[in-house]
Length: 433
Image 1 (cartoon, rainbow, N blue to C red):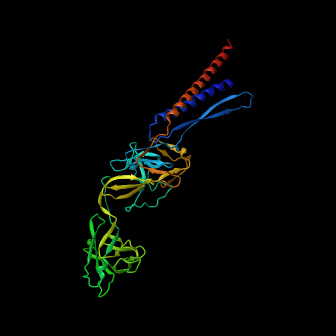
Image 2 (cartoon, rainbow, N blue to C red):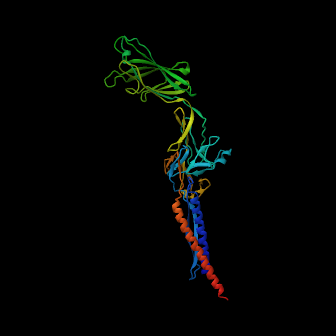
Image 3 (cartoon, rainbow, N blue to C red):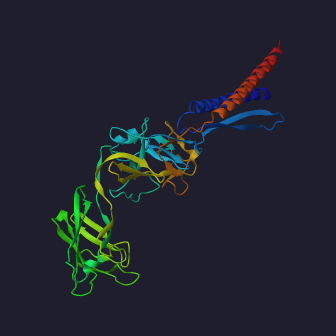
């Protein structure tokens, strides 16, 4: 039995080292494969005992697994949708064949990096057919609340490169100085006109025509103006009219003392904003809080529109998309504004090395890995998301070649054991002659 167990141990050694050679060959072959996770083979001794005094060789058992939790170095690329993860976490993806599923559900796969480019339908996918998944944003760029323990809210990321979009104006901030001398007795009371361009919901150019009429008293100075706001989109109808009174006290001179609504939206003294209802929807016009020198002022004898700040822009064509560190994908238009269109979460599992390995450097949740949870990139245990980047293979070629040498020696030694056992059995057979 001792001799035969030696033979079995030698065979087990050959098989074990052959398995190790296979993982080494895979690692070396994929040393230039982006996102590849190296495989390792571990040896475990087997001890056999039948209760007798003799020793029986048990041989060796092998287990092979992939070290998915190891991270390769990141390199920069020239494609904005080449995405890698700087730290823990994996990108949610699916297979391109699932896009034809009318049920709207997609099998979830995970990747640590990928070179995603739009196909003919604008779907971001790799050359091997792995499709990037994300949560869609609303038209205003906000992302709703989605479940984090299921892929039900995820959908394929779709980029329409011929997409046009407008950015309507919703907020205007006025930094304007009115001449204090215009409200003194004996002045002509000339109205000051100030048109301000804004962009409507269809990207068309409209004007808020704001006029300031000084209240001229019989004596002294009134420090009072009537501000009238008209909207060109409503045939210059009045959408707001207000009486403005300015301070003439030391320290606060020239700042707003009171704002009285005659018509139109209310004035918020805390924020300094007027809530105007235009033809295309509500708009906030900030004229400044009471005693705030940054809004409307009345000083000296000069009318000066110091600063007019507004959001919105005309219709633009989508020119590029980029992903930030928190996983938000932004559409960049050629007229200069950006809009959030997707959020790409990062999936994390309790045991990454327990994930099932698939083709194309993709992985799938298994009972050994535990359930996944979708995190915002850069939060919880996950790292940042990096655009213009790819993760290189975790293979260390020098180390693998060293392992190759030791594996070859171990294989040859086990073969020598088998050869020696064969010679001993031959000698035992020759004893009968």
